[in-house]
Amino acid sequence: MNGFPASQAMAMALEEAAAAGARGEVPVGAVLLGPDGTVLARAGNRTRERADPTAHAEMLVIRDACAAVGSERLTGCSLFVTLEPCAMCAAAIAAARVARLVFGAEDPKSGGVLHGARVFSHPQAHHVPEVVGGVGEAAAAALLRDFFMRLRF
Amino acid sequence: MNGFPASQAMAMALEEAAAAGARGEVPVGAVLLGPDGTVLARAGNRTRERADPTAHAEMLVIRDACAAVGSERLTGCSLFVTLEPCAMCAAAIAAARVARLVFGAEDPKSGGVLHGARVFSHPQAHHVPEVVGGVGEAAAAALLRDFFMRLRF
Image (cartoon, rainbow over all chains, first blue to last red; front, side, top):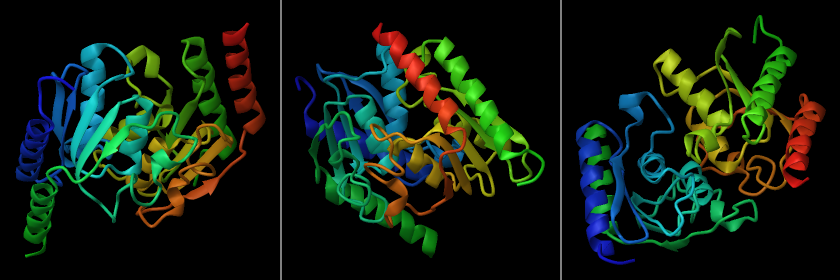
């Protein structure tokens, strides 16, 4: 990946997560970089605003990036997301042939990469990206913790 | 489920699958019925037309039905699809709280319900629908077989 350091991409994803939290959404954000490191798409969760259970940050950046490049494949692209993707998003990442997945905090409750369905760990995943976890983990986890604390009190 | 028999819903899903095949898409179709058996949404695959790897028939009917009812939850609804859902669609079905999944042919290559990720078979699936397979299986499988035969010859 050229040009755009991973730490900057995750910082941008964290901005999207914080903006999602400010809108009352679960604070998760994602950024999709092209093979040359340019930002193809950035988004935070919008499931509540859009009344759309598929509007996770990862799905939105995949759809927006595909629209931007005019292809259903994102070959050579990198997806940065603040939280371990769920099974839906992990399978969409495989379907889109994203080359590299970088995520922040692990998600034992809903994750589908390191937990539960472990979507990339079966032959039915026709593409397996490089996976890097724990980038920006503390900041991502703090956003989620603060969000759910506010809901509770 | 009242009013709309399962066989009619699957027949409608098969029509959508055939229409998708005629558009050059992998021939899979889906129908979403409300709790009272009314048709909330019907769709076939549109991944190629829309250059969107998430535009599987199941995802389209979930999104359309959620828009129709103004909610990200499809409590009490039934989703009919001609092929076993992949992991992405299965996880979206769980996220949308669909009550009942009825599918046609099994999909050992890409399925995520009975195969591979087995999305509903982990605690990370926060909702597990009733699952009925093999409804309209022969017709659904024939559509897919003919489609891939035409690609090959």
